[in-house]
Length: 600
Image (tube, rainbow, N blue to C red):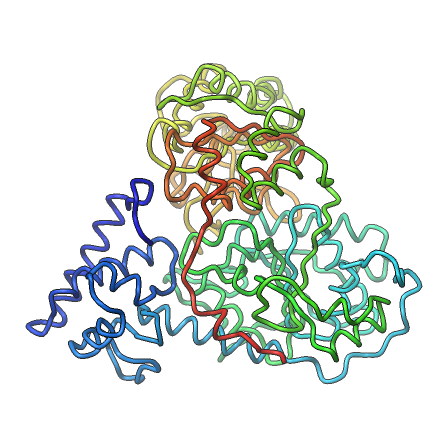
């Protein structure tokens, strides 16, 4: 957490941190020590950056003191309590070994670790199966099959893989096997955002087209956002389903699990019934959640199988048990994690596949050298504070098919027009790293709004105009709209041509909303890379900031690049690009340490 110019907090973050520090000092009263303000401010800033805890050594460096001495000072003045905190303690900070937590985060982390520890236990006796004739004994390992067999015998399975590695195919195979032996199995699908949930359902439908009709009839017909699944109400943080009123299901599959923050993950796992299975799908190399925690990355940091589990899986798949016991990375959960590494969408030598791999490896020079060398990976040298002419031209060209679809489908039926508009809009997306500045979200959306209104003759008045794409910024129980949902603004013949914002529904069709009925929203020509998670586009234009900033990491580059299915164009400077490749996103957390060895 040592700070340079790229690490300076935003003014809003700084104000919140200063407010927390002042509140804590007032709460302590005359007993407040000189170091307390600086420590409280650092902890609040860390929480805003997604850290669950802060090492005492980091805090001691701020106060030019010694770690254990600082811990004792915090305990003595009453600002902190030692772990485990008494239930009736009101102390806002918890000292746990070498870490300091906000009490709220400590409680969520302990609860999540306990719930996962129970979930990671093996099933009593998974049904024995004969070896698969396609197991490929002695040949290349079919890691999808390994994942299916692992999930058959476990209540918790974590499957990590990049785009196109077969996570959905693996789940389809698992569901088919489970439904064959348990036709009444109650299955739920969920994802952190509505877009990710819709994509999950669509992808699963595609992977199961060849299933027998009777089996297809048993498949889930809807996918939920996690908030909707848990029964979120109008009061933030309160859900209908919890440990005392668990979800009604036998198998829960969660896609895009890298977007799960600590608090939501804890509430989700606690809401599972005692006998349910949980399958988490995600990409350990993607950006973590916007809120505190890096739950999926912590859980999937490594994999290893015990001798007994390796023998069981090997007996069915034909994979040598010894190769399943070696593992990779730093396993936190034994017998629960599988990595899928072979991409069927991006071959290793393809432009996007190679670029993603080199970014992940921190090979900035090699990654930069490949930009522009392949039709699938373009580069625009754009080093100014404002986007250059070539960038602006590319942005306008990217949305030309969408604007053309709007201009030439006015006579079509509304659903047909919406189908065409959404299909065209989802072909291309501009992604940015930051909100502010001439290369940030607000400015780029303003540029593209002016261009679109001019092309469509939409004038300059009114926040909503025919053609405006919008993204919902918060979950709204009243409307049923979720954070990340994207809608298009068009005249609605059913309402005398009044402007309505249409949102696609999972499973087909659209819902129309009057603009004034929408929760907080923004224009969606450009998205932050964070907001793009769970989505894919044929072509992505990734606009880098003019200078290195804290949020610009290899994880952000990797996530942005892999949103593209066919082509990605990066615009920026070589220095900013290579600096991002060298910078890893790090989040302090104690979850891995609490789980290490679980399942052995």
